[in-house]
Length: 130
Ligand code: HEM
Image (tube, rainbow, N blue to C red):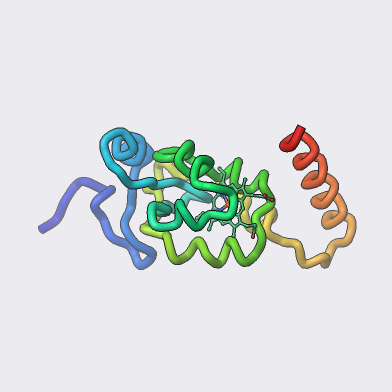
């Protein structure tokens, strides 16, 4: 049966969610759903395993965690692990312009850009641990 509810639509990469739906879900559910780069993850089974601790993930429940996730400078291994917890994506209207590809390019093809990334990362860690 056809539905007008876009959030109920299924895609090849999972279900579609609205930001509002995630925010509401975090109020009543025992699960931890977060948004990273317009993708929606259920990190509930990962809370205890997360090397950064469960608290940081719980704080982001129902929210867009793209910025804190990128600020930490997660490794390629961490990014591969994420696929396991992906439930779907945000509906088109709720998506932000995603620059993950630029941020993820650590290939060193452009050495000037690569060094700038390292400097930014180091500065972040300085602030983060102060
Ligand atoms: C599905 C999502 C996530 C996965 C799979 C993941 C995975 C990981 C992994 C594997 C590490 C070890 C270091 C590395 O390999 O980069 C790590 C560290 C960390 N993560 Fe995450 N993470 C996720 C989301 C987040 C989010 C949303 C935040 C912040 C709000 C966060 C904060 C941290 C912190 C603070 C550390 C410790 C960094 C350090 O001590 O150097 N993570 N994470």
